[in-house]
Image (tube, rainbow, N blue to C red; front, side, top):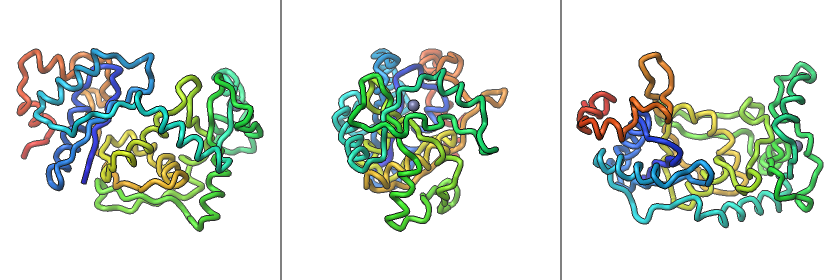
Length: 279
Ligand SMILES: [Zn+2]
């Protein structure tokens, strides 16, 4: 089962990344040994070459090996454009010119006692033919769900083996399927969710291994897979590595950075033991 580790070179990898990468690598070693490293660098402004180099050095230090060549998302913008066109041809997306300020103001007046949506769909009636470079592209979530209902989908499902081969059912009414999220950010032409599902399919990833913090991203990614007619992988959302205060580790924190640990003489075996990755 091909697995993947897909970091963004926007900072140092830390212990949480090591846990994720080793967990994915271990799963791949039990089957076909295909472990794929994907560099998620669509955000050209924030991604840095030195962080990318550090990713390779850190993973090598951990003793991991991966398939070559390594795919970089910054070389895949044409594929994301094609995916956007598929959604556009199905009439499921629209351009949005709202600024963050517009959206916050819309939020301050809750409507009909419903859980306030972060984006209220002010641009829903605009068509893709009038899309400008300065527009974000949003998915029309209601139209998308109706599209799937017409194909006889009753809900979205996925298998998460971390929860004992649990079949997770996501009703269309789920709180994770309420917002017209951005599928293509202005000037970038794609988004995290869109490029992940396009590339997981492109790279034949059958087993998506990632932290439990991304569990809430899975419903929208499953939706995009169905709309784009992409195969669905198995999921393995693993526990998160927390700091001493029980908080999630941050990329800017130096104390848990793999590069710092490596340079201070920590051995990979000690690190794996501390993460409970060795019996
Ligand atoms: Zn808008």
